[in-house]
Image (cartoon, rainbow, N blue to C red):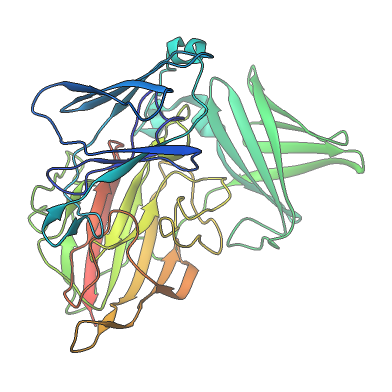
Length: 413
């Protein structure tokens, strides 16, 4: 689980290891102090004596407030804490409640920044209501290569240009160029180094450089080749738009889509699974606040789901195994485009004494392209339950973002 709110620069993740202790973690850090923090039934407060920078912390059932008191700045930060039933690996030790580190960066936001109102992070689920910025966002290509145009809200854009083609479709994995852009009327103008200029209008990018031009790129819309894949004979159909019964507490919306924030009743060991997911369009959101979810295999290993369109492709972005391994390429499509994961998973093996003899192995196809090939998972990702010989459910992690799933099925091996 990750925090959200004004404190995003201050806190990166908030974990609930068990029913009695919270762990708060942020990396990188320059110092740390340790507390035992119990989820309260009412608002409580305590003062840290270990550091002069942190003045007081208030914890309510749904809110964490941190007040800083340093000579250079004084600021307040708020983080909303989401409920999470997952057990942090090794959260308990011989039945005793463990104390966890609260790790905070030494450099804190200034009071002026903290007082600044947070921009309205609009969320769109209907392309017809998402506006012109959404219509202009997307992928463009020509015979030379391709570009991804990312809408950042308030008329701001970023264009990423690839030589050879788009990621997963011809890019040479060597040349990549990023250029900022700004809307001016019905056009978007991009300006870069060496007299690079580009103009986007009417579904076409016109490019001029010091070496020549104009060059044009036309808009294209890719679809995953496994979109709509039918479950084979013998498959366990976990969600087909008719019922969420396979997901205790799961919610099916009026469009017959499964909302993130649920896990299967059934547990699995070795299996293949197919699922399709839809990310919201949140142009003003950034990082982990932009269409955040995740697919937990056996409730242990998180395959990240995130609006990572046009990003680098790190382990905390779409297609990455959180904190472990990044995808070979970032195959994330634009938001409000249906995407697919096709997963082939073999569970970790244990000997008669319970000692692990072989790591879990997984192959992942994102939108039909292999991004992990026989990857060994050396252990659970943060928030995953401890490894053992038992199976585990699929979890579609919820982070407060409206991420939806459909056509989910599993074939046990």
